[in-house]
Image (cartoon, rainbow, N blue to C red; front, side, top):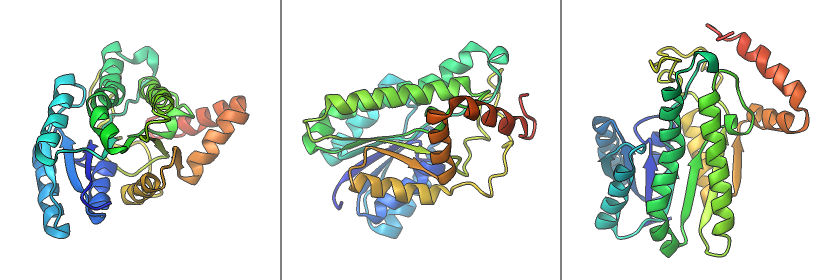
Length: 268
């Protein structure tokens, strides 16, 4: 894994930040992509000091096509190659569809789906040369849907379809395509979830103490990249949820309904 170059979008916190440290341990050059430049610059400096690697912080918004092209070009200018692209940037949403402004769904799709498509489009020619990996960090919600997250779930389902189709296209090229779907992870994502009017939720409606840690998820993702895994479901509850949704969908619908109804400030 040494001397490889990895790009991580959404690298300022949560799983993205944890992935940066996990890959730096492996000796990677790590390119950190996020909108919050101060945070990724701090992370970059810390990675360089702790692991002696060469990390690079680039401010970019993955929902903007030209930004994605820019950070791929800057990575090539600096390192000359790209081995791994991890599409991790994402935003959540929490509101009943009837109360949801359509622009909120567009914003979620722009980051979660189009951000993945844009970054992958510009990185693919370089990853083909290296026979590298393209990874999308999605969610169990892209396989077992949740109410009051119509925009979020549809964006994750779209990413799954995109990645699965791309995998077949690249079947004989040596490029590794992996989808990672974790269950609930303790992070900032619920604090920044968009409400019906586009404002941020602010306080998570769930107890995050029992959730997976970003570090444990990042460790498994890097292990999955090394083993060339196809799809990774992370978390026992998430694996059970996907199984129930597939084999007993009506039962899972009711189970999910009552689980969300019990949430603090439930949309129901």
